[in-house]
Image (cartoon, rainbow, N blue to C red; front, side):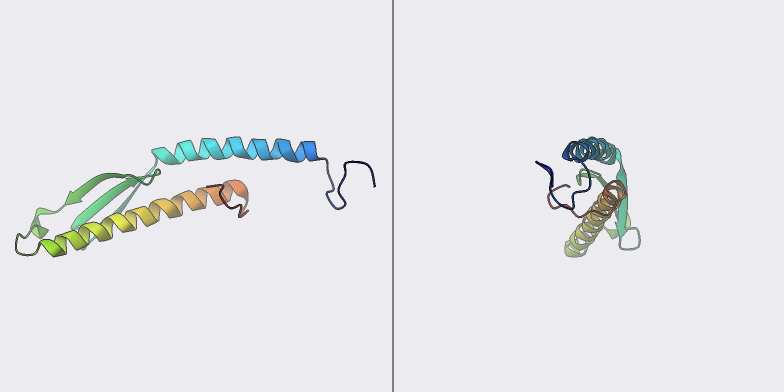
Length: 112
């Protein structure tokens, strides 16, 4: 066994480091691109629509005036929360899906 080599590594460490740097650059580019994407979710049969970007920020919320009832504000609040939460889940799913394509399904904690 040569000096500085680990059994079973099957390649040189320099090559692996270059590959990791390349993957890191690709991930940074992917994250920048994902930040520009938007996902939409609705609640109450379309009564409330939430729009979230790839940074998981709420961009817009639309409320159909037919569900604005001063006597039932709680229902409207529930619809808003449901729409926003679903949009956030969709944004997270979109991010995870794109990152898995990039990493080939590797599960590296803290990567994204």
